[in-house]
Image (cartoon, rainbow, N blue to C red):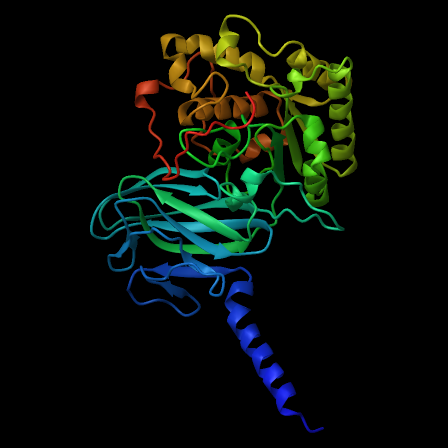
Length: 415
């Protein structure tokens, strides 16, 4: 069959488009070698000038100021590296270190989810660590999508986009290699409000984005919480639908709502709140998952008198009625706040929301709750996570967490 010139042009353009997008559509596994040394077969070399573009599908994010020191990339500032990938769980293995000097590297993923904390290497020494990162998009299998808020489409977009983004931070962060592969592991889904979600900018933080640091690379933490949400709002926005479309037997769903729910003036507000929780519990179990209820931590003023009305008690009662696992973060937070005494303000950024220190301590309370409940999930807790007593928090003056570059004076939605 003879092809016309217009058909030939179309076919050529189609082939060119396919070739252009090939890099962007590649699937894991990936093996990246940084610096300017020799690389092994099958590895992709990354130089300091390789910046991310949708066409290439991998590279440093704009603003990165990195230098090659032999077979490593180092910087005096935080830097980001992204890879375009489909939705799912990924095992990420990094080799950190620099042959020319000592390094200390903290790794965060997506919207400041803490993955590795202060990995130190001596000059010429290297450390290899692995962790699991969950990626998601708004689309729901079978149709529909999560109803994102405007902020989720702008400064929170890294939580929903089509790429894996890693932040390398700390005192002289140094990266030698990066490997990414699909991970068939159980998933812990989180749903809640601004005290749970991945806050996009300093100085705000939540326990949900600190939680991954405390688990081995055998479990994924998928944080679907969002600022300003009630359980009813999250049901309407299809946040639960999204989670249930992904849930498989052996997964978990941690649910914490209350700060915004208590503001409802409806006469049956507390009753509807309880019914929504029971609906979520039933659907989780129908999917083969394990529901875990978390009572909302107190506000700063809760040290003097409770601020959440009957909502924590309602969650406790639901857990009892439904024979459901309960993490009483509300009770633990009051103990923690009283123990902080005059340092209480150093855990908060405003009367409701926490900073890095406060959310780190609350994440340890959640992990302790997992242990106390004897959830099978406890076997995935990292070995360096010792038993945590909220009556004896980590010393405030000894806590250090490298700040991410993004900062905002705009407080999270809700209070």
